[in-house]
Length: 227
Image (cartoon, rainbow, N blue to C red; front, top):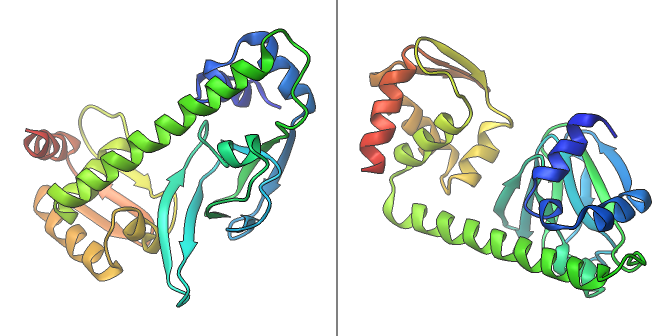
C-alpha cells in the first residue's frame, strides 16, 4: 500500500476513528484489490463477507427494482467505505457496487477481529460512526433534492471538484455524465439543460471535460445559492 493510500485511511470516516494498534492489526489482514471501470465489486443480496473501503478511484452504489430499474444511491471516493454493518453482522450487501473508474478497494474481514485490547468495541464504535456518516450524507442528499434545483446541485458539485481561487479552470468529471445525472437526482436530459444554463457564467462541457472561464463567477453563483 502506498503512503498516499495509508494517509487516505487515516483521514477517512472509518479508519480515522480506530486506535492505531487496532488499525495496524486489521491492515495486516486486509486484501487490496484492483478493479477496472465497469467491474462489479459486489451484488445486492450477496453475503457481504468483508467491509470494503475505497483507496482510490470512484465507485457507485445502486439498487435494482423488481422491474429492473436502477436507482443510484451514492458515489464513493477515496477514504469512504461500505458494507460496514453487513460485514460486522455477517449479513448481506444491501446494495450493489460497481467501479465507475479504475479503483482499488481494501477488503477487511471483520470476522477475524484482532486480539488487541478492546478491538471489538473499537471496531463496533467505528462502524456505528461510519453508519451515522452515511445517514448524514443521505439526509443531506434528500434535502438537496427537495430544495435545490438541478442547476444548483450541479454548481455545488463542480465547485467541490476544484480548489482554484481565480481564472480559468479546466477539469475532468470523475465519471460519465449519465452517472453524474443519477448522483444529482436528474435525468441525463435535465443535466444537459443544467449545463446549458451555466453557460451564462462561462461553463462549457464536452463529454467529461468541463471548462470554467472564470471560477470566481461560478463561486459567486455558488455562494448566492448557499445564501
